[in-house]
Length: 117
Image (cartoon, rainbow, N blue to C red; front, side, top):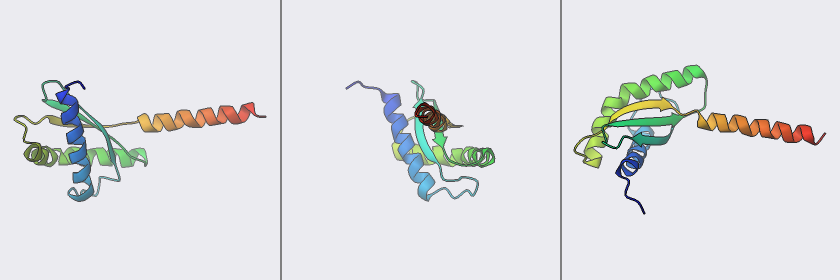
């Protein structure tokens, strides 16, 4: 097993943010979101937090605003819990890979149904 600290730290950050979103952060702008992954730089100074959710573009925009607004609180709390010397600056980004894969799946289904005719 390889030693990859940024990946391990990213996974711990993902878990902690998911817990916080479930019970600690009560911003009405934040809808039902899933933290899909966290990519941390090698120096552990920056972290991109990817989330996905269902909803309109407006819902996604509001959720992103709510997450960015809560980022200071999230960073402080996770810093205490993980006891790191430096805690990465968090940047939230919408992860559209689930929507994209769903779209591709629909195209494949359509192609299969057209070929049966």
